Length: 96
Length: 209
Image 1 (cartoon, helix red, strand yellow):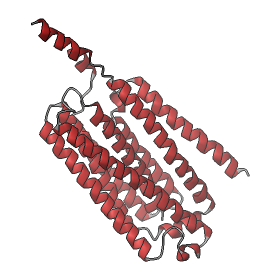
Image 2 (cartoon, one colour):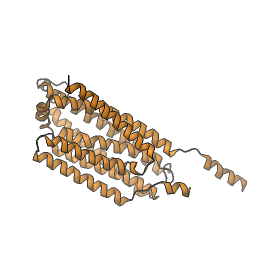
Image 3 (cartoon, one colour):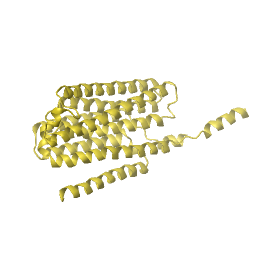
Image 4 (tube, one colour):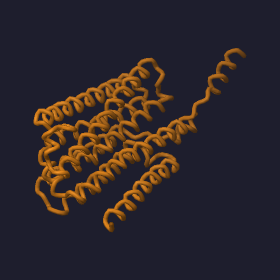
């Protein structure tokens, strides 16, 4: 049992709260930037910040960083699948 | 004595595969990602085709209520994560408090959603309304996607609330304990996914200038 326990990585309350503060900070940044209006960069920056926020949620809240590699493979597989679908669709839309 | 040993052996042999359970959960989340991914794809293509119209339509959305709901959902993700940390430390009471907080935050999210949609409805903007049909194609598409995507997301919030209510009961009845919390962990994963989807919905619908 103790052997099993050693393998399980427990995240402390403090780490979770720190990540939450970071998420709130990124939210206020993205709202502020949208308010300023940087033209064509607005969408890019908004998506970049959303990507950073999801990385935090997936790694810490969803524990992926400390899980077995197979879960990272699952995640990568779903990400790559989506990317391929998006790329193929836009290949059609842009060059029709 | 031997009877006691047998009982101990039987308890030990109770089959429990936490990693397998989690794997099943992740596979389910994979299908959820594809479900919402398809909708995001439709959004991306139409936003590319009707950039101007999307901007005009998005101006009507309330950024304040969107931001508030983002903060509420991020906080509810925190409380779920903390409730798992609490049960891992064997703090049953704190864990239950945190799940209850999550449920309250989820309810607040849905109440905001209700008022947001009610305002839209009272302005005559709802799927199939005459006022919406009179608008240009791009705006009809924007509102169609807005109602379907935030609606489907809201449905996921409601399902999450039901799941977390079960978890609350499970913790109370000691079905979820310090040594067996896979159910709570997997419910947490689902809740974080709902949060993740909102992280993308928020800038795409509420932050278009």
